[in-house]
Image (tube, rainbow, N blue to C red; front, top):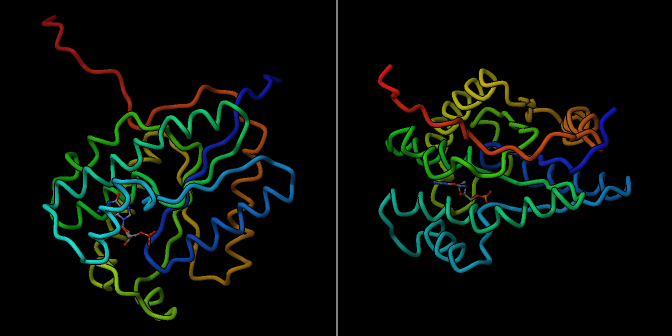
Amino acid sequence: MAKPNRSAFIVIEGLDRSGKSTQAQILHERLTNAKTPVELIKFPDRTTAIGKMIDSYLRSESELDDRAIHLLFTANRWELASHITTLLASGTTVIADRYAFSGIAFSARKGLPYEWCRGPDVGLPAPDLTLFLNIEPAVARARGGYGEERYEREEVQRGVRELFEKIGREMQTEGSSWVQVDAGKGKDEVAEDIWGAVEPLIGSCDSPIGRLWDTPPHFNSGA
Ligand code: DGP
């Protein structure tokens, strides 16, 4: 069997209040307890200069053009891209709490063209596994309610969910590993479902790190 030459990149996606951050933490602890080097990265990373602009926008303390904020979210992922590949190459498993799929779902929900939304994220490190924590927006809202942030409204989350489902179908068609998890279940059950999908990946990634949606360009050869 080929020797694993890198570790796994795992993305957790979902609606607001789907339990995503809790599950990312649980997974992080579980891997740490299993003596697997692991780093949890949260997007948006609100600590960087770009992240601070995003944070201000999400709190409605500033207004930005829809395309401008979209590109900031993407830039926030790109500023960590080489860190992610370095970690993976050095044998540290990476868990990302949100990634490019949130970028498309939340921006396309505003009416920006789907393909335009995807463009700036093409070429980011590709996850080996994306776990989509699926939940009814009404159930998510009932979980202690939404906070004060910009997108935390049920009708927004409904549209975002449809877009996540579209992205998931496309990812599966492309052969990417996109796993839908029923996030309406109890916390421990969800954690078990996640572990069931993650465990086989640990220590078994022997292909080079992929690039998201990076297909060779189609040149018109004129033939
Ligand atoms: P969180 O910190 O996970 O609660 O995310 C903050 C909010 O930002 C949440 O409502 C989802 C949204 N969001 C996350 N990533 C992106 C992105 O790339 N683009 C847009 N437009 N929104 C995003």
